[in-house]
Image (tube, rainbow, N blue to C red; front, side, top):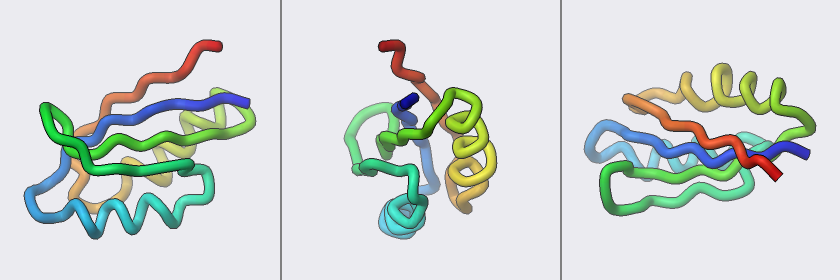
Length: 76
């Protein structure tokens, strides 16, 4: 099983809407607001790295009001 952590930057005031959208994605294990350079951290799991890439590209990055992402694929 492959997993990744994604740090998101978002438009001001859109955090609750984005968190709710993220939690509807079946592969999202957890999603939380954070303070600092980034606004939200997301943990996802999938059967392969290839599937992780698809989830990030087609399910997460397409959520409205996400302005940038930083993905860290876990190497176990």
